[in-house]
Length: 627
Image 1 (tube, helix red, strand yellow):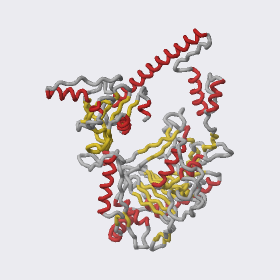
Image 2 (cartoon, one colour; image 1 turned 90 degrees about the vertical axis):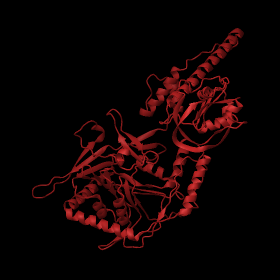
Image 3 (spheres, helix red, strand yellow; image 1 turned 60 degrees about the horizontal axis):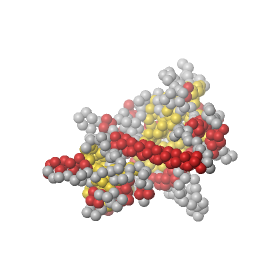
Image 4 (cartoon, one colour; image 1 turned 180 degrees about the vertical axis):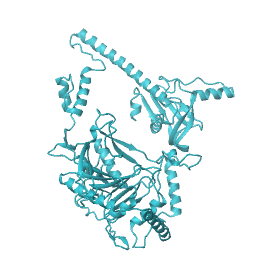
């Protein structure tokens, strides 16, 4: 193995690397007594443990094994807590254990259950630890890593001294023979290399040349130049109008404008004020132009590439182009006279990038500005893996493979998005509605103003009295009780099969094939009442389990909404998502911490699994505090 072929290269094997190092030097790795994942345990340095045992049993202690390189446990406590994630471990036998053979490896640490947690080679700077020193739950992890860095630095200095002696020998030999000119030696930090680094950074930012760069470094720079990117003007500007209509609730608005449309979405913060602040309601304005539907087995271009080209622009004449960030918001306002006449709307454009630190600047209290709304199916993971392989220039299979023989897609898409050119947002803390329209062409301004004016008229004539809200509440309660008596969900994996699958998962974990498996059971139901729609089902879900990041998503579901009934007309390609999730897996927001720093995108991943404990609210601690 490569590690045995590099005896002078400092190596630190962590977890699996620790096990591979043991195998390379003749030890055995097998199942640990108990799989341990994400648990913190005490470990004890081997020498201190042997010394303690010797003192307790009054047994003469053999001289400790010596190593050429220092221990990475130097100056650390003899015992401390570490985080373990492993199903396999180095096992000891009379023939193969590191301590038994005592010719290549020595054991440096063990857990209290006797499992080897640290090893070190006797004559090479090769170390292994079974636990994770980088974990936030490991004590003294930074000190252990610092000790390894010291070994690396010392080895580099020793190697540098060896190289200097060899160069000196060659120089002396050349001087004596008069056949070889005296070489020029450079320090480790060469000025020329520093110039090349600066030049590359400058070109990436401004396309210029770093001050003080030499012609030689410029020539080198050209060979490393990144593809030129031309920045186009923003594709969209944003128009907004704020409406103060606290009495009109999102469920009413969605039912009126969106529930009957073939494509629509409602991102629903139904659990406010617990968590979640914003509701987003939208439907595509142009079905022929604003729909992105991806079928993995049929489409050559994956959904990520589709979205990237739509959001950031594609290549033009061989040159990569990118849309600049949109920072313009056109605030729409209207004034009414005492006679009730409405003046022409006024659009006041504000540049978000120029209002940093201005508390009087008018900005929406959220980051949403319109854009693409949709879903990514689980199978998209294959595309993301392929994308990363391409970025890393790894093996991505046969790039010439085509899908010409695959039939035209006629089923549910793997992923689907639509462009929300017009959308409505309800901000719960301020009880305000926001109408949001995208402007791609100048005529879009007129289209958005007409739409906003129509919504304004509807809202003003929409008197949501207490009796109306009570009527809606009673209707939901009645639908909820009726649906519970009609809908029966059946798991597609029976109890016996499910229990056997759990045992199989345990076996995979014990073998070390995985440390965490997610076993799900799909529930299926047949809604026999054709008079009811999928939105009726969603209303039951959101009332029974209100969540901060719930969603109702319709894709290619025409409907027949009469005065006395509403009915979906699904097809093989129809899809409805009724989600009631407390989790926002990821969010991307625009950030500008300082006016001299350009706007940037900040991505936050906050999955619940493995990060938040399940807490029953008690003793003054609520679920939100626990999370």
